[in-house]
Length: 228
Image (tube, rainbow, N blue to C red; front, side):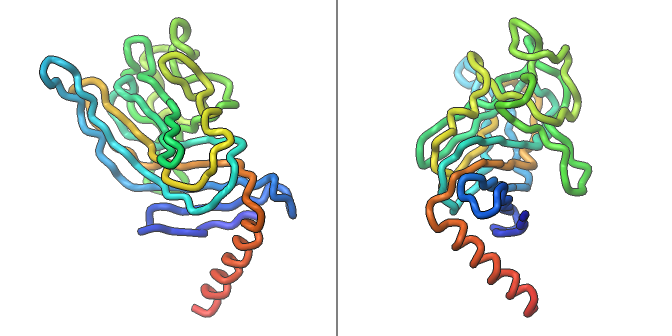
């Protein structure tokens, strides 16, 4: 059973619930989608040092449950992929999860992560620990992609930091509840961009009673729509 448009905050955040196993609280996929346009400012030189330009998109999650697996998708328009460092931050636990670290040995010159034609769904760039490869050059990088990278690249890719891969496992066992921030920084001058989409896809073991309350609330929403 898939239920969409569970919550909509200012038209920007939509939650989706997918019950993976009927009657079982051990198999629930919670999905949260943010869309909009947040500028990523250009890096600048301050006192002789490069200062990144930083942007944050956030999702507020009201559900509770223990994360078993987490994927993150993004659509980011930017003129030079190799400028970007992307991280996921969970405010309540203080957990910072690296997702992408300046792809390409000399920096991929390709444009954009994911692509939106103006009609949903967008072709997103998906960070997934179970993906086959990292979006990076071969060794000494982590990946398999040749320079200058892939314009509008989409699909599933393993996340990585400057030193390690499969970093989304750092979110395992956290409570899904709270504020999740997508943090994007531009780390070289002369190129800018925007965050246009940010989604969480979490396999969660819910707290006792959560599914019953969820079902009751959705029944009420359906009745309200029918009356209108």
